[in-house]
Image (cartoon, rainbow, N blue to C red; front, side, top):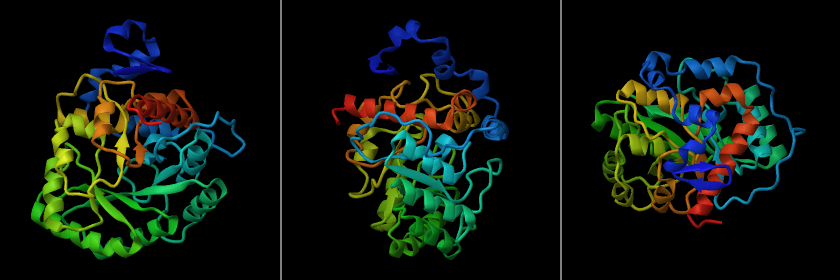
Amino acid sequence: MLRARGRIRSLEGASTISTKEKNIMLSNRRRFLQGAAATAGLWSHAASAKVAPVTLKDRNYEPLKLPRPISLAALTVLDVSPANQVLCAAKAGYSHVGIRLVPATPTETQYDMIGDTPMIREVEANLKATGVKVLDIEILRIKPDTRAVNWKAFFETGARLGATQVLCAGNDPDINRLTDNYAELCELAHPYGLNLSIEPMPWCNVSTVKQQGEILRKINRPNAGCLVDPIHFYRAKNDYKDIDNLPAGSLKYCQMCDITAEMPDTMDGILYQARNFRLSPGTGAADLVQLLKHLPNLPISIEACNANLALTMSPLDRARMYLEDMVAVLNAAGEH
């Protein structure tokens, strides 16, 4: 379903979509196929542009009732600093924010985020000033050389900020070794009150919800989970029953965005789209209302990065648009 501002409409009504919307929703197929080397290119360009920082003096939006806790993910506004992201979330009306302590790619802006650093202190000050809470920290890639003890400072910093969730990725082809390391990480993180959820992604070694369910059953840790993201869920052709068959308590929170109807036909294209051309919830081809039925009562992290919008809209306006669209989807699902 495609959602125009304030209403639901079908693909048959696409002729009424503005040129701008068409450009966003039907992003040039050629861009999807340019490959992993260019994956972060547009975001890097957007982030390098002069972006006015969000301040507490920015215009106020009308209050928005949130049916669930909703967090602003780092990738959604990667063109602002983590401290400014907190202010952006607060002004846009979010209850939570997701903080990227470790960069996901080598091309993004690097911040000193582990331990008692100036940026961490600024994040803390903005959290205190706004009342926004931290939902998750990222990203913990479980790789062949991962050693749990090396992530202690990461967990300490997350706990200091009040986070309860850790976004993880499975990047080790030896699934037995990955599983062992994951179990050790969960054990180390438990005293800090942190849940570690692996997010299945098509290009990662843990690529499907079903596969993550098998890992969860093997390690049997109460703070281990599965993080469902619509773009990965549908691109990897997961089934709703795979969510339902996860061990009890495995769903800690979920991510939300929307996708184009056209699926890139290479893995590089899928990766490029996921990092550069996601759509706002309810404006694309994903059946988010149906997906939400299998993800009941979970906190939501909006991860809806779009490099084109980053060049034409402010971080605050994008964050608010995504939030309004997400609330509309929840309302359509019967949540108010």
